[in-house]
Image 1 (tube, rainbow, N blue to C red):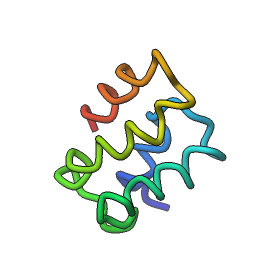
Image 2 (spheres, rainbow, N blue to C red):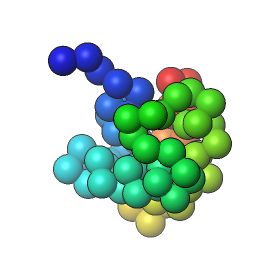
Image 3 (cartoon, rainbow, N blue to C red):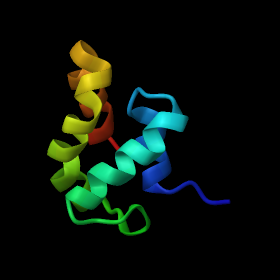
Image 4 (cartoon, rainbow, N blue to C red):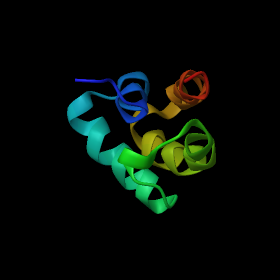
Length: 72
């Protein structure tokens, strides 16, 4: 199975994959992109929604998580 950009986001976001997959999927959908159609450009545009999804769980670690995601 090929690793997708969505899989990389889930892996690097700082949450357990059990929580990350649905949280990131919802954030992407709010940003107007599906996990299957995720590109690097779409990821950059979706970062504000991803931040909103991660912040309640990661608090002070959110900025570090977003820096990791920007490197994907």
